[in-house]
Image (cartoon, rainbow, N blue to C red; front, side, top):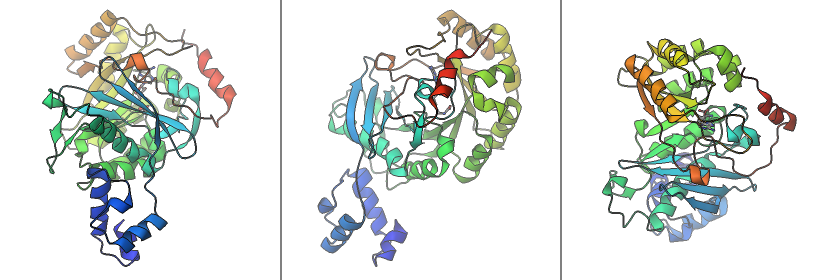
Length: 367
Ligand code: SAH
């Protein structure tokens, strides 16, 4: 933006002013940016755009979770989810319209893939959530002050954490996702710290290395199985980037930083990956990785062949990991009554990949 302003004969600091107008004061009309000259406002009006996706649906779960359906400029729709907790407010952000990875247990995969999101479509999800929650008065009157943190400007914001865990594989849209995450972390916009931004990947090894070099945010990896034959079936990307190489890459990611850990997501699928033996194998392969395991009870959706493991099975699995000194938590299911839980985001768009491949998803044999 500085380059842009210098290019039109303005001072570079206009970039900071503009960021503050848009991200901190939530002004999306150039006409109202009163400390910019009239001519500059007109130039901006003519040469740039401040458009936002349109909110075409907002759902509120009994547990406080919000889900927005956002319509993009080309008519495609994506979903964004806000999960309030006592000490934070986490926004689950989408990176693609659909997903091309075809993980067998995920609703987004079932929908197919259309395209990558642009930088503005990614950052707009954070803008829209903050704005909707603040202007809706939902948080202003909240007695639970824990829902807010204070940033340097002493402004209260509902979104304190961002997880790139919505629709899509963020590392297949690297440039746009990194630009958007940098913007989220910029002091002149949302000012989120690096540890409050988490990117989740199904395991794009070469791009994970690139992320470590260029934008080392907190990392989550969708593991879901303790061995290659099973992971090949659940996460087909594993055939290209198998577990051992993936774990090596995770060790590189945290490097010498002994305070950092990689979060491993593990969806609990009844009778598929939830046995005590599998818990022991998982503990074994993670033994020397700085890891944190997040067990996700499977969230069902229509026509899936999978079922959620029983609560007792999940507890037993967790206890086996804990007994082997692997830090493990079970992710509390949030927003499932409005289909906002992990793996349930589907949006509304036209699949541009082959339909027949989608259908194969239902015939994976786990016996
Ligand atoms: N493509 C990235 C980002 C998506 S994150 C990744 O794979 O990490 C969404 C998380 O929800 C992933 O860990 C995914 O494996 C998990 N998930 C997908 N379908 C699910 C379902 N039906 N129930 C529970 N978790 C699911």
